[in-house]
Length: 173
Image 1 (tube, rainbow, N blue to C red):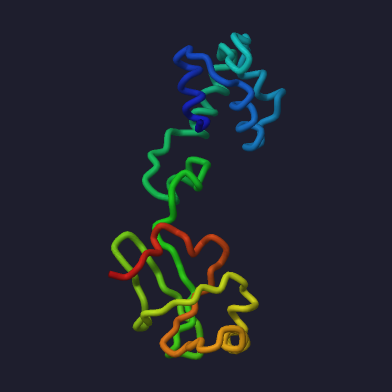
Image 2 (tube, rainbow, N blue to C red; image 1 turned 90 degrees about the horizontal axis):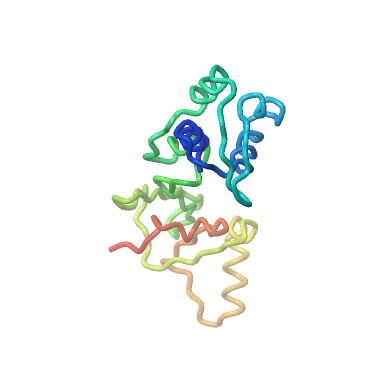
């Protein structure tokens, strides 16, 4: 839960998980001594506390420091304190096309693929960065391991961990 929601619940008299709230405030540089000069707590259950405001001025400063953010994209999610609550708007694939001697960047978003080159019909994904940058050696290895392996008309993408599985990377239609 975002800090502003905890503050809203406290102001409305609703119980909160004070331990979680306190941990979030610690991450923002507030220590227990400061927190306990603003609030008093009464434990209701294992993780639920009734929290009272004892310093209205400091509480107002907390509200000003942690406003309600409308999360519409990754940037607004970052401002709200958790950029991972919203997916990225574009994905990037570093691609070594069969037509060029230098990798290019392909951008994908919800509207489609943006590419400076014509993509091939075949794609090899190499997850290991060293194997990707050693393209010729990797292709030679594959040709040696798999008789009949043909890399003509084959683009090679760097898998970059699980980034290649981004929902925005989809087959061309």
